[in-house]
Image (cartoon, rainbow, N blue to C red; front, side):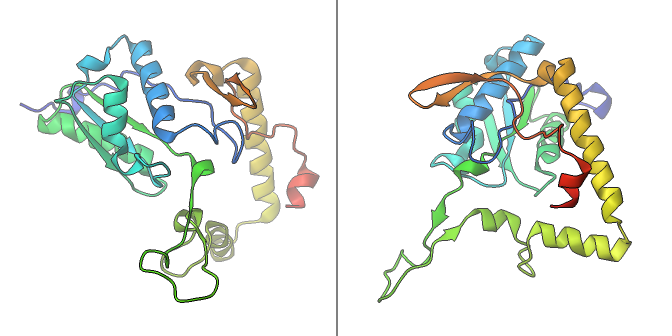
Length: 235
């Protein structure tokens, strides 16, 4: 017997800090990040992994050996029962939301009673690939392809996301100064959220490699609350 939409409750959630590209999280496997955030979320709402019967994991770019099976890997690492279910979902920039929607659909259909939805990316660990190496290469250099291109380039015209944004700005008449003003407001709000402790309430600090030791990583890396309008204008 499935649940009606009115019976489905979003109990709570937690996340890791956001890492900037190539910085604090570059040596942390994506599945470890997901397990860390999931465990913190369950602790916050007072649930044990044994209560969860279905996990939906959003991921757009598998970066580690276990990435293609990330949902199942995270479920078992977390301590969910072996007879529980798990799946991966991808819907480009809507992937995290799709994980929540898919978990809700499992509840509605009666396939789950307590589901866990999440998402994980670690683009700092994206590999380079040699697509011509599988069956041999007659002679000459082989080209290494950055797998980030698989995410950042439009598959239809080959443009980067940034070029798509430029096209939208031209089509809809977005003004550069207005966009810089919005960006400045967003950065300052992020800084206020950090300084006030608001963002800290949703972050589960994590120990990460730091040289020959470890450090506790507990704050988003990429907000730039001190950026100036002049610096934005020069980008």
